[in-house]
Length: 101
Length: 300
Image (spheres, rainbow over the protein chains, first blue to last red):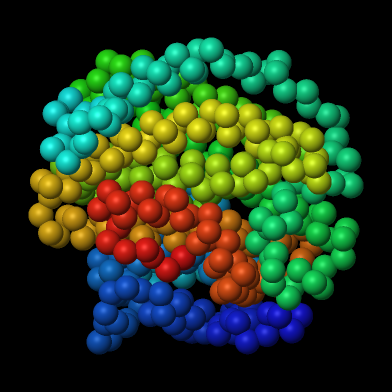
């Protein structure tokens, strides 16, 4: 990594797919940092992130790019349904569980 | 171009979008071109020239630019160009669908429909043209990462949003086209595509600006504060999101640059890239502010 890139990115480097808790924590961290809505009192893995405004349609592109970085491979958005963005559980199932298997 | 009367704020001497559409239809017919025969496609790119002007490349003005060799810069310029052409193509897809949906509808006047036929035809040709460049020289079109979420709209909201989106893709693209269409440092085919695109887009933009001004004057008056604020907030976010697409990690990966996602984040945060975004958006943002679709100049 060049010096130019140091210090710009607050998240950890690519996380092994066998560590679901770390992945889930990073997803939550991203959502809390980027959301325009007020943070929830409790952020469970079942919290409906679209309904509570933690994610909107314009955030999704950024969020998908972040997920790609965590996964280490690209996401084909034509192949996914909007329901995968329901909560942390559905995100894990759609994007990470297949790679961890 | 709406069927309703122009808003009272429209100056008496100003031409309506319908009146301008008649002139633009005439110009489109006089300047009609054939996407399959009017462009001379080289077998391959020389590899010795830029495809994107260095000053328009995402890393220009950052310390990272200085670390790249000339060979790396040339290679990155191909993928930055590919991303730019892909973004334009991907933006034109819903535009074509939306224009087609408006033909002969009550949302446009007969003069408007007449012009939309040309608008649509030209946008379709642009997609063919960019698709040919991308498939020939890059081997792919960068996919968009958007996911459509269902939502409801107030009356007129989707219409205003559609023409805002159209202007964003056209005006930002046109800023790049104008800068590159006469740039001798560029591969001739890249220069030519920017030139061809600009010639049609100048008419689309002229129409889009007038039409959006009329639409916003009409609807902003009718919406309550909640809808008005929602549209204004959305537009500021949409502009920002549209700019983010110019920093596609895939183009850095394809150019062989390491840490693509971190590079994207760092470049987007750099003052040099913010300056480019603000400069390139200035005219468009002024229009949105003048129309009342933005309450202030957003941080891009």
